Length: 271
Ligand SMILES: [Zn+2]
Image (tube, rainbow, N blue to C red):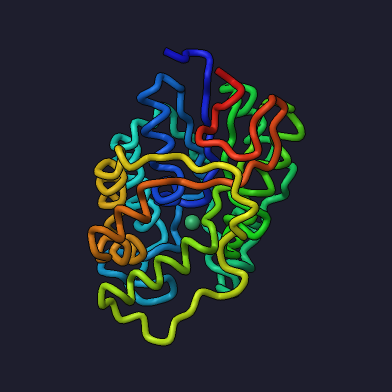
């Protein structure tokens, strides 16, 4: 249908592809757009089987990596992702973790090298639309910040993407979800949405309706069963899950084609 169109999302870990971009992957694949997922790390600083955390006994980096990449292979089948490119860097762990000091982890690899590899992938696939995280990696994780950096650098170096996006959750939506959760009786304790969490609503440019792909996103999430975050999302009341997963929101960083300030489709101006 659109054999000339390609969507590329640049993510940090196996599982990051689902929540913010699983719907656009599934939707655009169905419209005939070629879809490419770049996953930068092997996710070895994630949870091990049984919820064991890095540094705890029984957490084996190689085994966690193997398991998470296997989970990723299943997830992408549910989201109809055509091409998965693994950069294969070791996971840097959350800010402050021991792994941060390792020169081999993704966040410490010279940008020249990692961005160069991503630039080669952009040359190969020639995506008109590229999606990644904002400058803060959306929540401060060193690998998410680095994924942002290499995506920006590779886009600048190649000049290939016509439209470039940050996955972004509007702040009002987070507040609404918290209120909704409290209203449905979920015990949130004293938790409040931090001031700097999410993206100010007025900065959101793009809201894509993906509720038709809810079941597929859930299957993709379930594929990442080893991760505690996945369990948290899947444990939320059904209607909360539907609201969380039913639309995907973005901040358009740039577009070299005419596109309205507010759009409901990443490919507006390219069809
Ligand atoms: Zn991640």
